[in-house]
Length: 305
Length: 243
Image (cartoon, rainbow over all chains, first blue to last red; front, side, top):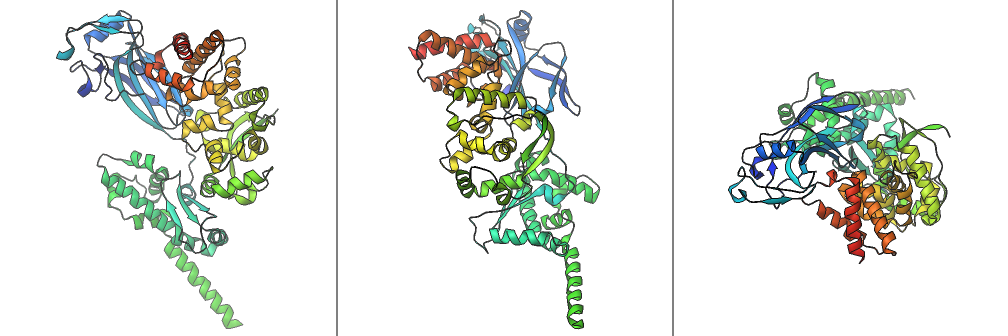
């Protein structure tokens, strides 16, 4: 849960100073992130603030501080109390998928009235009635991304999903969709799909199929990823991976081939046509060689007949 | 019953379902058994996962009319699946295994299939994660129990019975993100129940009630409200709405 720029009928301390009513005071969610195979841990989690009012209210037991953990993908939402003393919050990773938000709030434990001069001029020395559970300080926190992906060494299987649509006519151009699921989806008519299934199982023609179908589809996908990066200077690979889930397999594939990590700068420079061919095992040379051998074999058979 | 490995619908099969929703809806409508799925979908259609559950059965319940069977089926799903990782329980592909393979005939009978929208919304969770789970033929059974289970009560399913008796008491709450906090849902259901028992009659005010709870959360942090205080707030609001 996040308050963003929500306006409250009384002054609140927001860690985002541009919308806080308490000047330069921080409302810090302090912890060290740690991970084990099964857990995500907010190590030594505690809150810190130099705001006099919040410290006084906390010390008087009128407010409590809590961290709200929310993941919309797993409909998870849970609250954990924070204090000034550090303690660990241990969260099973299996509760989360994709973006999970961690935010922090101070809420009233009882009804009370406060008045302070340490606030924006408009609110100074005015009495405000606070009711139990009212939010009086907020930090919209951060998000962490959780992925439970079974790694596959087969680049084609981890990136492409090839399906038929009964509504497509024979001979109709196939469709490539890059942002509708976990993989790049290639859709073709029933007849084409039937033929593809036959060709795909013949070793001689497998790379031909890669050239005809997978290389152009991956070029389309990689070009979209490059446009995404070009359109947002602050975007990184995590952002691309959130939009195009299959892209997460690209970095692993790149490292397998080139031996080093793919960087944003390198990705911006590299040609999608080259990268697509490299990732799919440079199928042109292999397929031409196989086809030439196949042609020679056919000629020999014809000459000997 | 013995332990079984769960399965999930494969990505290719899911994409095939999305691309051919109309013809697959027809096949579901016209076939009481699921033999056809093995020729219609790209194979293998499902992948077996490492996670195990206690095997279980469901009782046939035409259009979910029998509330007792509905309750027993919901409890059976919950008890068997409650220890699965949450990211699996909220994945449409897990429920699609149950819909297409494990309980095809029973799922097919549980709701009237009016057309592609029924399959999209109630089999495939097509309206997004939250709505999908709360509308899904079997996932909604699971979440009706998961969000109302009252471990401290002599009968931990007393609120589940209340929900299944009239799902509207629960549905409007679960459209809202605050309903992921189980204690908010339990407190709200207790407050509803108390107010209706006291009022003597039930009127469908649940949409307004869900909005009223959202309104409470406009300056307050709903998550920090105790179950008891939520019960009292909802009880008072319900009496106001019913009057």
